[in-house]
Amino acid sequence: MKAAGKAGLLRPPAFSYRPRRDIRPRLSNRAQLFCESVSLERLAERHGTPLYVYSAEMIRARIKAFQRAFRAVPYTLCYSVKANSTLGILRLIARLGAGFDVVSGGELERVLRVKRQAARNVVFSGVGKTVSEMELALKAGILLFNIESPSELRTLAETAARLKRPAQIAVRVNPDVSAETHPYISTGLHEHKFGVPIPEALVLYREAAKYPRLKVAGVSVHIGSQITDLSNFQDALLRVAELVRQLRREGHEIRYVDAGGGLGISYEGLQQQFAEQISAYAEAVLQPLRGLDVHLLLEPGRSIVGAAGVLLTRVLYRKTNNHKRFLIVDAAMNDLLRPSLYRAYHEIVPVSCRSQEKETTDVVGPICETGDFFARERELPVVGEGDLLAILDAGAYGAVLGSNYNTRGKPAEVLVDAGKTRLIRQRESVKDQLRRERL
Ligand SMILES: *Cc1c(COP(=O)(O)O)cnc(C)c1O
View 1: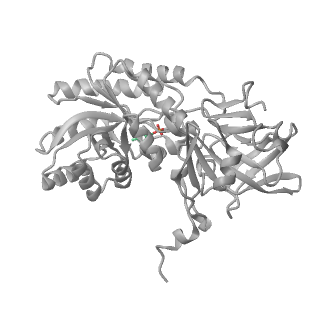
View 2 (view 1 turned 180 degrees about the horizontal axis):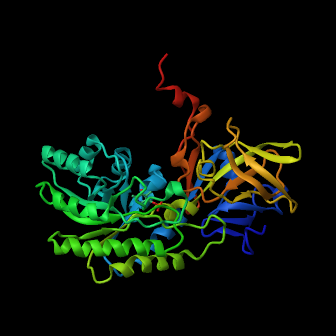
């Protein structure tokens, strides 16, 4: 397999092809895809498909790479919960000492369920926080609210006063910097709904300082997701650094700079060594902040979990419409929306390498939408009905974007860790789905 490379490593250390000599002699000469030391074929047999499979070792390696890259400065890594919020994943990340970035009360409740004390390392982002979400966060005693508008600031001030609880705040600024990513995941231009333009932020900080329960504590920025040109981060943080100096001149105590998330990953399989990528990212973030003496907050999501997960799916049918080939698989856009929503590319590989022969085909789900596809006109090794495919790099913005469209249950999710497999989310049944409906 070309994509697998010489060593058969697809996404080290998580996913690789290995000869499978155990169990079934019939398959003995075929390389099979493994997650760590666990055969994906076996996981599919045991848990059914579609199935999300995550590698704990990969997630740990990514967190540790961040920790190494930023060890020279005071920082807190606040994993962005919205990338993958399954409790089993959050617990793994909490155990590595990370904090969390949440964008809803629901996400905060997930974090509290996993580790109550993690609240003090929680940053609350998002343009539309409701009063009840603010109450929850104030009672939990989170680290920082990222404020995105004057009205939100006033609502938080009132809520904090009513509950008699303190709230540390940062204003999320909109630096008017392009992220050069897909328009739906670009957030740092004035035309986007996110953040406050820097001149208006100055006014907002002055107002914030007047509310007794609010404590101005930081400046926050997040310019988008899947960013691969690191100079975009540098541009944004140069503007943030300038703002920090200005705010300090005005007498505000700015302790934190929240640099957001957004570091991109390679979906094409050409994995730059993550250690190198992360140290270049650290340089882009830290260089503009040099000499400022701030505590850095980082909110990575995709770069931690993206490459750590695959979506396993079985080929239901092969079909040809006038020479155009289709592989109809049992996963669909409700399980993994990224190709339909962003036209995102995901590498797709057979779990078992049977054929050297290749064909050009679409890979589509069973949902009644033309947009229900995982790949179009893709060259793939020939696979048969009943064969398993792995859709790679599905760990971020995969399961979390799932829906019940076509009354399809959300897939099961398993976490592989040191040879052990844990079912971290049961497959959703139709009964589960109907439970909340009334006739
Ligand atoms: C989505 C989001 C992140 C995480 O982005 P990634 O691209 O997954 O790293 C971080 N911060 C905020 C405010 C976000 O909205």
